Picture 1: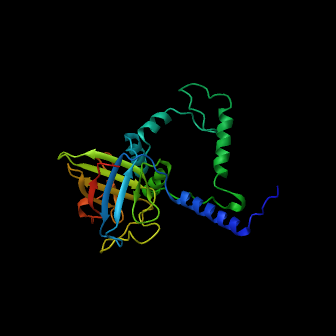
Picture 2 (picture 1 turned 60 degrees about the horizontal axis):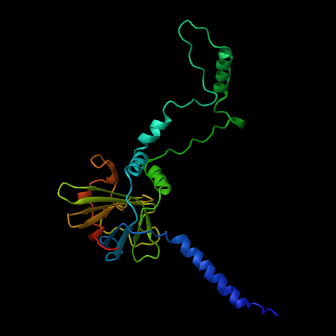
Picture 3 (picture 1 turned 45 degrees about the vertical axis):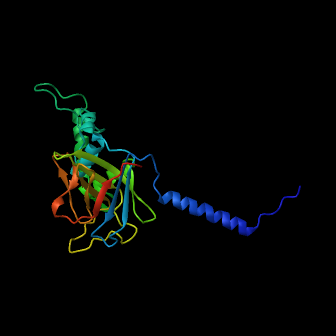
Length: 262
């Protein structure tokens, strides 16, 4: 049987379909079963009036909360500190000091002398140049790195083609029966366009991610604000990262409502 030759046009069409499919897969976060669903409308941004859908697959655990809190405060989370205690010293470390009256261990003097010679040579490279110091870590860079390492807890959708992956979703009840919900995306809202450019006189922040705080009443209705202009702080009551001076910030998500269905 004689095989028919595939026309170049068909090859180009097939290649184009594959390329588009790969691009869509790379830009669109994976979906999962929705555990919570919120709707809202954007406000006080250049794209005000846009419909927002927040689909959460799961809630972050206390361990997740502690990891991000430690990243922001540049401290070691409790679990990691417990594992790291009592570890072995690094190679080349100085020998322990002998007890009073005890003779130094064999080779201790030689090791101390070698350490002294190494210290004298320290900091000198070829030609006498010194190594450039590593850039200092900041709470912002530390939190950004930590968010990149956490799994996706949900997706925030708008009219934009691509959604924003939510890497932190934590909630805690309030005395009046309401609820505070803290969300964090690994990318800044508006990273692809100007729909999230703050309006008004507030100075935009330069975070590479976004923190969102929703405040809901007992009926699951309320509002939300974001770190587009708000600073991030430690909320000692909830033991989590949150927005600093929430009451003074402009509303970014109005008409927030928890939906009963998925």
